[in-house]
Picture (tube, rainbow, N blue to C red):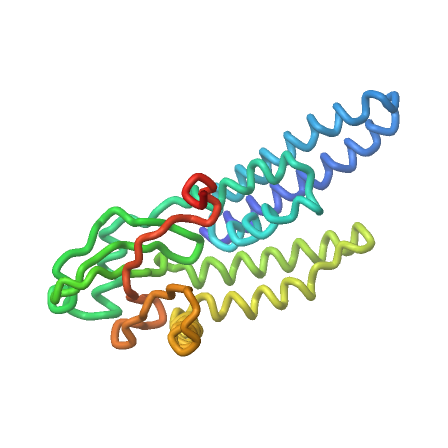
Length: 247
């Protein structure tokens, strides 16, 4: 039932956006030229709100889509960027009780590994969230944990996205996004297995150590890495978008 509801909401949202866009095109052509820009600004704001509300409700892979689109100011009007860029920092979190259950399933007796885990996450994203913790020897670490049922959710979202792409491709020439979606699906399968991330991060860490360049990469703990959990060294820092701290 949940998957059907997601499919229906996805269809409702994008059908409204598409039909609204076609109506707006027709109405715009009937307006004086000096009024068309203001009309489209209002329409773009309306469509952007529809898309934003849909992504907030569905979460899952749609957050990835929104995050990608938020970087494409060359492709989308500013109204969409203004809403979608909020996806970089406004992801809801999974309750700690659910996170703790995942950790116990993946790692076993947590008291044998951690002396403390902060229940409030440092950050949350579409795939998982990160908690600060301390190993039993006092070492500060971060624990990255996948959201519950995220794999099933993302795969269903990808299937819905492919169906939308096919439908829009039939309606509008040049709107076939199938090749892009195929690449996204390949990337998603790896993102859903933290062991791939561990392998890449370890290679980067080793390369940085050998080269002596001034880049700090968190060290991973291989015995605390599974498909759904990854423990690594805690390094205090800030986002590259924090201009004040960059200065």
